[in-house]
Length: 61
Image (cartoon, rainbow, N blue to C red; front, side, top):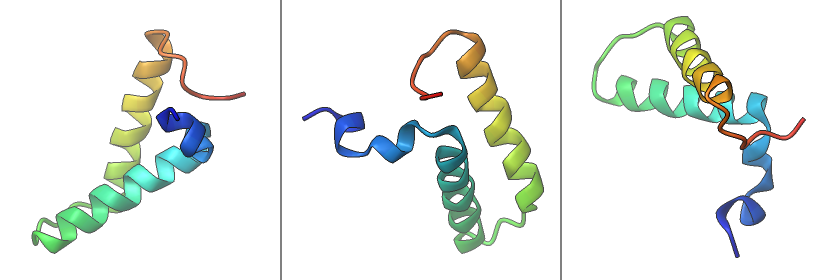
């Protein structure tokens, strides 16, 4: 079974963005690194947008 077959929800951009944002924010908080959540959201959205522009097709419409 392939990864995206096992976890189809990760193909949804909004869900993936939320999971990545929450994971990065919580990890940095545990390490006492104070970064605002809005900054992390901007970075995650920028990376996902770059992936889309490069033609990496892993999101469903």
